[in-house]
Length: 141
Image (tube, rainbow, N blue to C red):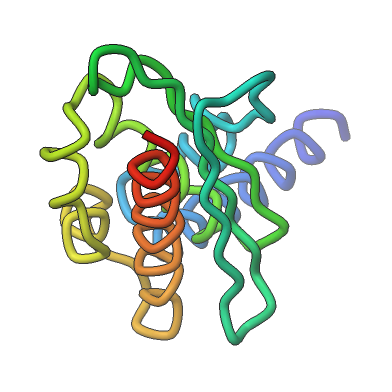
């Protein structure tokens, strides 16, 4: 009986993993355990964007000598918003403000290996939040 239950649970887990892979591509681990998901104390800049879907993404940056030394994000959104915010932070970390300003939604989608067509807006939302944070930092400077 226990073996049967273990097999059933294993099958269910595999189905969940397959569905997550379909939804988030090869970056499923970002959804389970995003590296950059946290509210940042005393950020040098914050960018916030809200999508038409209702998802909110905030990007927090710490900047030293015009280089992003730390990035984090917060979202009220779905799994694709989580993986997109996480990838935006990864892509901008360690880059100069100028280099980070080149990061767009297509860069995030490429690094994620894509998202379902109805969720690609999440990558563009994360990129817009990053650009807002960069613009806010430049205005403060």
